[in-house]
View 1 (cartoon, rainbow, N blue to C red):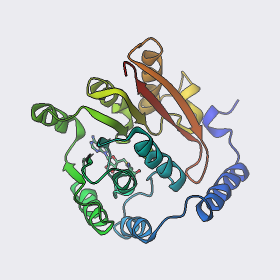
View 2: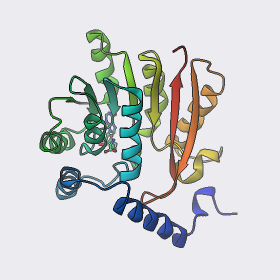
View 3: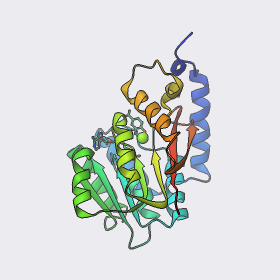
View 4: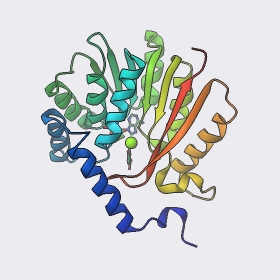
Length: 233
Ligand code: SAH
Ligand code: DHB
Ligand code: MG
């Protein structure tokens, strides 16, 4: 039997991408600044792994639904998800986004500025694990929303750090937890996959959050988000 991750056929993947295109022509139309952010990232040779437009819109809707004012993002890339979330913040809202690679952060800085949300976004350059003690010292948070989208093997570490620093009723969202279905494969050798499995297993018995994982298909293939609500609100 082929590995779980090899069982989605290319023709189905085409359908998923086609549907994303239709969604992108109707309810989720990108404006010029978002398109410019994608183009700038491509021109600078960044990998095209930002959230898809429908996924990004979901993040923006959740920011509005929460009435969020403080957001923490792990993994800036070219600033695409940061722009979408920052736009959904009120004028006095703040998004801190952590990016390991200075050259990516510079592309993001320019795109974020161009999108008109430079005042609301602070990019911190360096490995997220090194940024966290600094945030702690500054007394950053509590956050209304934490979006985890950096190095996938560290997702559980970021999640449990965020758990202590997200307000009751707030959300922690982790991208790329389903990984072509390998989430369901205990024998998958990939460290990133095992990290998502461990996170799910630990959350099963953690009464501090109520969580779900939503599988996604689309232009980025088969993946999914973990969405966890902090209890105690
Ligand atoms: N959230 C972005 C996509 C992020 S892609 C969007 O949807 O638009 C993942 C990013 O995490 C990459 O830019 C990568 O350089 C960054 N990254 C990888 N390891 C990291 C680490 N240890 N600390 C901070 N950022 C990291
Ligand atoms: C990768 C990272 C992402 O955040 C993503 O959404 C898709 C792929 C990657 O590192 O390959
Ligand atoms: Mg991602």
